[in-house]
Image 1 (cartoon, helix red, strand yellow):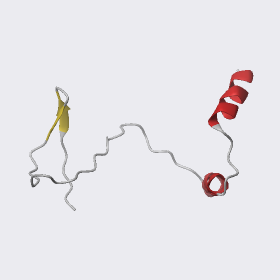
Image 2 (cartoon, rainbow, N blue to C red; image 1 turned 60 degrees about the horizontal axis):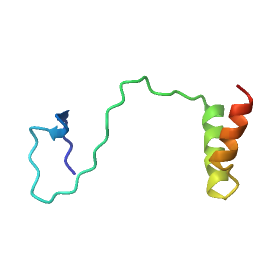
Image 3 (tube, rainbow, N blue to C red; image 1 turned 90 degrees about the vertical axis):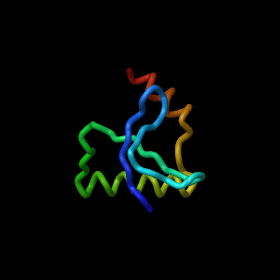
Length: 72
């Protein structure tokens, strides 16, 4: 694995790093926002929610959107 930084200039990625022809790359855009910090209880709630979704007990996005629109 090789890590490199670059910028998008006129729609193309520019970097000084060199990669072999045909190399597969994974690009991650930097996020300038402050990271989200959760306390232990909040993190447990998020992990519980993920587990429920993985178990098929999630709420469809369309239903969630309707519910949120009613509470504006």
